Amino acid sequence: MLVFSLLIILIFNFALELDVRTRQSVTAGVLWSTFAFAGTLGLNRSMAIEKDRGCLDGLLLAPVDRSAIYFGKVISNLAFMLLVELIVLPVYSLLYSVNLFQPGLLLVILLGSIGYAGVGTLLSTMAVQTRTRDILLPILLFPVVIPVLLAAVKASGGFLRGADWEEILLPLNLLITYDVIFIALAFMVFDNVVEE
Amino acid sequence: MQPKPFALRIFDIAAILVLGIATYLALTAPTERVMGEVQKVFYFHVGTAWTALLGFILGGVFSVIYLITKNLKWDKFQVAAIEVSLVFFLITIVLGSIWARPAWNTWWTWDPRLTTAAITELIYIAYFMLRQGIDDPDRRARFGAVYALVGALSAPITFFAIRLFRTIHPVVIGGTNPEADGGFSMTSDMLTAFFFALFAFSIIFIDLFWNRIRLGDLQEKVEQLKLKISM
Image (cartoon, rainbow over all chains, first blue to last red; front, top):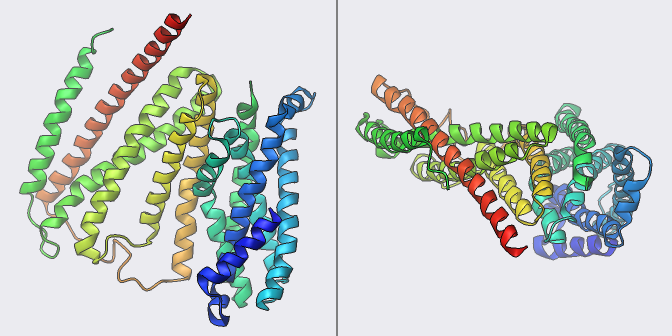
């Protein structure tokens, strides 16, 4: 996941010819595409190892509420995503000499990752139980997380440009709304996804 | 095999009739002054869009009912509604594109409505890909219902997200707003054609929806027979 995301940044470097001027306008986009692609990889792996050796069945036997499993998976996926982001950000800053360590930007990345991991965990739990498995997850996930990516790119871009607070507030609100709605929904329907 | 119910036969015939009448009305309605003939696409465009959205909403409602009752009947209804809507929505997008070429001078712009439409279409294509990957009917129904629910919630949020994106960060593409560019006021003949098209597509939708449910029943029966033979 980590190596993959570094490779994506390299590919973007050549594909977009990131010179100083383009860099300013596309940094947010490049970062979020990297997180999105690397995120599917991590989500797939995290659920596949549960499924392969029957760990998921073992987890389901545990005398806890099913939602505990869901939130546990979300937190672990989120931790992995944040870890990767924590390494990608300084590398990106170093390679392109953009300062990415702004509290606002970090907040956006946290909120975006929560939404992404929340929906992604639910969908990857479904995807690993199908015949096509790994291929299916991005197809299921990407159209649904577009609001997160849009709002996150918008808010990150705003922070990087040092835009007005009002301009950033809207996408930030949208991110929070999305996180709340989808985690609540996943919490309610997760039982249906793991039931045998 | 059960014969087709009588009411369904009537709907079949009615659907063909109203489609014919709607076409006639659309073609004989006064030609719009600025856009000319291409404006006639509009009647069918709105008709299909309306029924497609209705179907997607129905799909979301059926998936909630399925998740509560766990009755496979609602799953059949849900698939039927979404499948018919998927086709109608594709027609909407294609017709809109045909209209947009002369009216906006481009086949496609990244306007909120167009983008949301494209993403919605992709969500429901993904929905069918998900269903295809699962053999067990119960699990297929459960996963389908969950994904349909996620999709139905995500589509409106996408719409707001893109609107926010565009209003704050305008991209200069001439006239991306349908109200601003390509809007027009209708005469009474045009209104008749318009509302009749809405009515006609509602009838066609009900007819297809019903037929698709019947097809779902038959499919189930075939699967049961196959199982019986293999045992």
